[in-house]
Length: 248
Ligand SMILES: Nc1ncnc2c1ncn2[C@@H]1O[C@H](COP(=O)(O)OP(=O)(O)OP(=O)(O)O)[C@@H](O)[C@H]1O
Ligand SMILES: [Mg+2]
Image (tube, protein in one colour):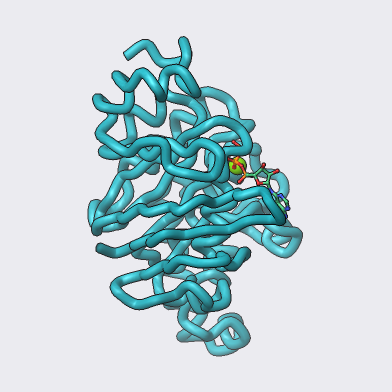
């Protein structure tokens, strides 16, 4: 298993936001995490990336425990997530931003624009990655001037620049047009088959298209995990979440 979550708990006072969560992702997983607002989905992502520390339980990446490691060490070991593009990246072109992310991955952040050979190699890798994710035509534009949907694609490209083994996507298409969302999901469909992906998404059309397995969170705990067919047919899931949103 590339990612293992064992008996993870987090509470704020009497409120359990993460309740005895067990979840495993094999290499190449296409796993969706769904559940109503406030179910604890984003909290779980923050526990995985190290923004939050659990009260008890374990997280293993590639069989090694990472439960108490700081975020940058988890990233270096292959845990990738998307971040909103920050002010620094907004003032760069995509090729510059991705070059910087590649250099950070390789521990060369301070030198990337220093030596010509290093800069050339990094720039080449950045351009290839941007072409691969369909951003070729935008790569030399100023990022802050790009359409919002394109910026969201760039966020995925920046996460991929770290060469992750596990990619965490928390509502990647939130707030974008249907067309931009479809483009984003075509990109997600085209990602390497050995990359394990954990996706949080409210649009059930996208969830059922993407996922091989689905975990339903409610009140911080796992209500049920199964195949899309099993989840779509589960009466409890329909009662608490799916309702009429998904006509399976
Ligand atoms: N620092 C905190 N202190 C107290 N409660 C918190 C804290 N952070 C999160 N919570 C609570 O944890 C619960 C889970 O929130 P979380 O953001 O993980 O839900 P979510 O499943 O991602 O919801 P959404 O679908 O709306 O994004 C919520 O009830 C939230 O109010
Ligand atoms: Mg959330």
